[in-house]
Image 1 (cartoon, rainbow, N blue to C red):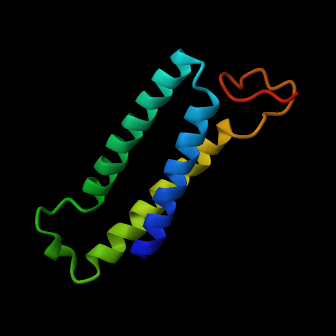
Image 2: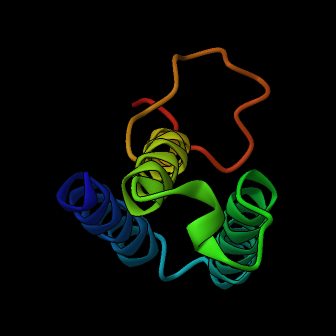
Length: 104
């Protein structure tokens, strides 16, 4: 399970860097996009802490590391899916696309 989390984290960082590289000229976007990613990291860590609030990880038994990695993998894959919105064009006529890439 830990290897799945590592793979998801590598993918997250790849997509994140891709978006930053593609949009580097848009400084306002880059600044706010980085803020969004930092906020997501805080959310991710808080979500894991809420899921496993005991200060002693032994409270969750010998499978704790596996379960924690599984939860991290799920959260990370969700974030990758969100980030990928910036890598593909939105359909023409989507008036709510904001900073997402336009088709054409």
